[in-house]
Image (cartoon, rainbow, N blue to C red; front, top):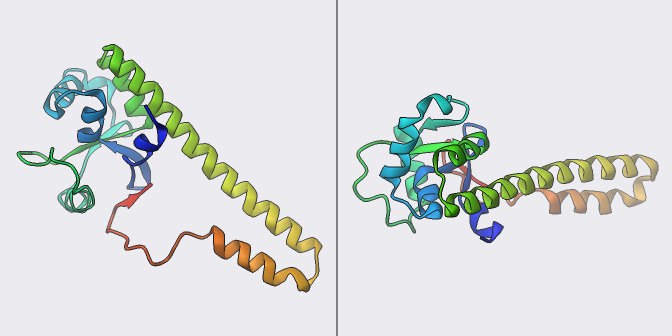
Length: 164
């Protein structure tokens, strides 16, 4: 399973990288209802920092951003989201070969995102260190590099929700 596909389904909600129950169900090739039912049968394995339910406002924001999905139709409850630890715990609840393969791919994706974040922070530190060593003639170069590293400010941010 391509990591890029999984990355598209990782969101930043409440300051945590999470995946929606509907996206996980699609990846695991099970119904969202059945995924949530399996979780509820094993709820002691999913404390609040592993899984939480979206508020109505968060749900609306995610739903607006997630228009390509056809799985939103008959939901009676707000979506659940799973943190990295929650996704890992799903492997103890969903035991099919598909679930094992998907879980490995998702864990690899979370690790890759974490490494990219660390690398980005390291790069900023290195640039700051190098800049201190050189005089002002390179200031323009360093300012340009910093500007390229910043996320685009033209993106529309949704309240309480940010795509990763």
